[in-house]
Length: 97
Image (cartoon, rainbow, N blue to C red):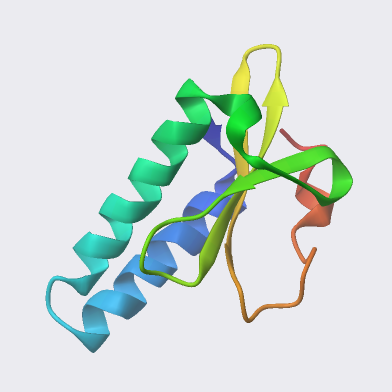
């Protein structure tokens, strides 16, 4: 499993944002996203089918989706997408994986 560089950057930015809101909340966000990506890594087909030949899993307690593609070498996370952001903003990344 690997993260697209933009997905990794948005993941880090969101963790920093949550930590700025409440001490320890950024770490909770990281843990929940990591748990969701672990489910995707172990059971790739379990993620909900989504747009542009992707799948997604949902971190608990946070309004985000981890959007990924299944490739021969494993999964590639192409977005850690907040629910409030325009759907599909990450679509140009799907072929970068």
